[in-house]
Amino acid sequence: MINSMTAFSKREVKEEGRTVSVEIKTLNGRYLEISCKLPKTLFDKEFEIREMLKKNLSRGSVYVFVSIEHDSPEAEFTIDHELAANYKDSLAELRKNLAIKQAVNLDHILTLSSLYLKKTENVDNNLDWKLAKTAIQEAIKSLKKMRAAEGKQILKDFRDRIKNISDNLDKIEEIAINRVKDGRERLRQKIYQLFENDEIDEIRIQQEIIFQANKLDISEECVRLRSHIKFFNECLKQKEPAGQKINFLLQEMNREVNTIGSKAENAELSHIVVFLKEEIEKIREQVQNIE
Image (cartoon, rainbow, N blue to C red; front, side, top):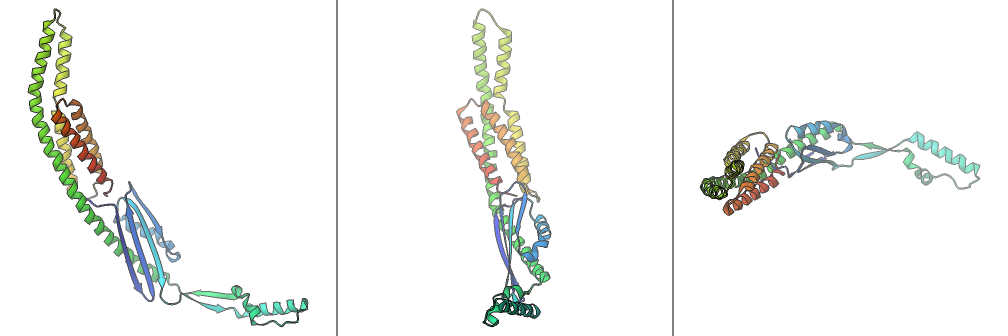
């Protein structure tokens, strides 16, 4: 299964004057790394949120933002009458001690309001979590759809490029057959030149035969490359995330193509090798974006 690692989703859930908004953004990442930004009422739910994400995502950097807004006033103020009366008495005593003629009034008491005005918050943690959980589940579902949709485009690109590689491998094998014939003739000429000398170096002849045979034979590299292509196509059909497997296969494919290139003594073969390396590199770039 091919899923992109980059996506974005946003969901809102409203109930009883509350609006819970959830945004999830995912980017490329070698491992699954989750970062959560939550309101205070949901701090203790971070572990559950992470577990929800782990069940649905396997790779990538994941950023979760949750916010809660209240349509009605969030809090009301109440007065601690006993404490306010104590402040009044203290101010009256202070006025007397300092011989201040002005009487203590309400304005004086209100300057100390922050000390005895209490904020009564309208908080329901259970309701906040209920709404947040619903919004997160919907956001994850939307996120997965977006990752899958982009993954389909990447999958098509993979299949087109791997077909190009396979088709050009056919050309390489055709060229290899003709190379054997041409190489055999060149080897005869070299051996003939050796025999023209007064002294015949048997060891030199054996070394030249072995060297030329190794240079001409790319059959093993072609077989291994075709095997990697076959496994690559199988990975594209698997249900589990295939990004890491594909990345490993590309390394092996590139190794075989490099070996073929090192043995190339044919301009057409060299051009095909360059093309194959370009296709593999383009696939490698895309692999960095899949799960």
